Length: 269
Image 1 (cartoon, rainbow, N blue to C red):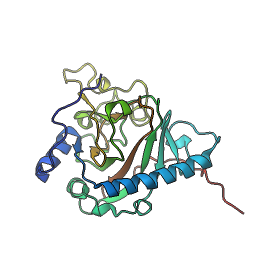
Image 2: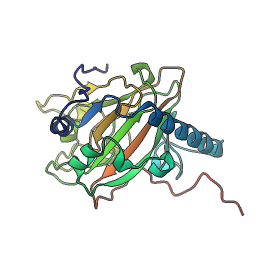
Image 3: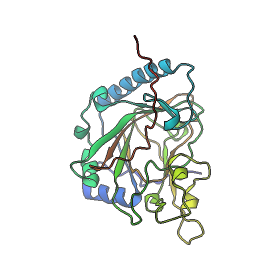
Image 4: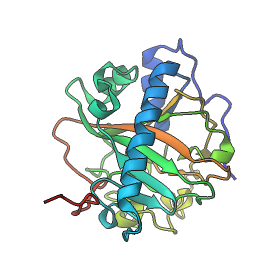
């Protein structure tokens, strides 16, 4: 059962140094609402319109699970969980003007690059995802983050609606290069056998604590790309929508997010 940390959310006055330290040590940081209601409403409206357009274009076309089985415009990350790319320009925002940019640039550098953005929508009744990381470690030794994700609640997300669950500090343990018992593809591509427990195996290292918390509209979850995490199941009767903005260090080019080689939108003659 997921645990909820009462101190997971820092207050809005927390020093940036404390937030950076929390993100580096825990692998994630949940910030209270940092976007005003108008900005959240705009992001949600753009997301609704794009989701409707792309899912209408998808219609009854075949689509599997995972980025390689999807389309350029839509991926089914797990059953009933849809990922639709939307650029900052389409959202009507400048990503470097967003309130989380200071944290992102402090971790990745001022020359950090925008890599992906969009909306993830989970249908009512959609099951929990399998635990996974979003990209692999690049060296045997633990290095600073090479990629950061920011997930923004586009409406209030109670626990029943399935917020993201994180394995505390698991970015230190998910290195397949230093732990040969870990299988890279099973970490990245949502394998049913991947759990926080496998990261520690038969060692005396404590199993990373699973942490999930409800999110208020405009709040954001920032996490290291190597962190073990999953979207929880949506047990409500409404879809759950989160916008995401992903960033990478300058020069980092690994891509396991969108690997499709086809478009759902048919070109007109």
